[in-house]
Image (cartoon, rainbow, N blue to C red; front, side, top):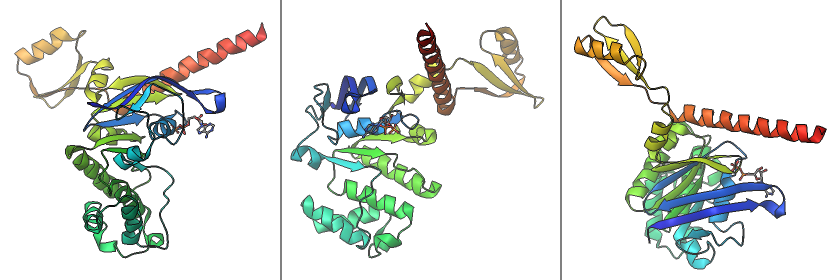
Length: 295
Ligand code: ADP
């Protein structure tokens, strides 16, 4: 089975009130990293809760490992890194992991290996309350991967961390992916998504407004289509791929350049444009609702 996660046309509301997820489709294949991007309140955590069985639902269209995401066997196969840290402050790093090792019947030797993987071997005997927030996050990740889960869920794994720690965590996740782990993460960090994700989805206001590979999304939104040329005279010029075609070709024929770059939109600019587009649609909806109210 290749699809580790499959959501098809999923809708969800808390307590039958306002719908917070609409027509969500997500497929995540084995050994890939899927990144869910979106502003606060978009519904990212709700999706993780649904996929990890923390939110019970009757949806037949949510399958993880081909089944509904519940049951002991399921929890042996997944690791979760979410907001609520839940570490034991008075226990040291090693002891925290030993508690989890017992629950999952993991050999003690694995604890040392994992502490090393996350770069905590030198503070293994330090109590958690004395650790920096970056170290605590490393320990939370250590705890989630201790039992070698096939699938790892991470809700903003590098939020609030210094760039060095964030970089180490990203590299660790890429390493785990190479070892065959499937990873589902949410992030606000576009660079993180570019570095790590095979597929991404942009979630706004409970709707997946765009999804695919980063390259395909960039190609789709590459409406600027400018080519930047630095001439032999050192001057930077921009040619529009259609409008300035002749001038650009002339420059090439004359070999009057020392470098040529195409300018593709950054993920961040796409994110902002989509967000603003969504805001426009929302404004329009509000205006129409206002009008209806007036009639
Ligand atoms: P994100 O993770 O993208 O910030 P969430 O999934 O936390 O978004 O929230 C999506 C929407 O669902 C928000 O409007 C939020 O207020 C609402 N929500 C989240 N948790 C609950 C809950 N337990 N009960 C009712 N509404 C909730």
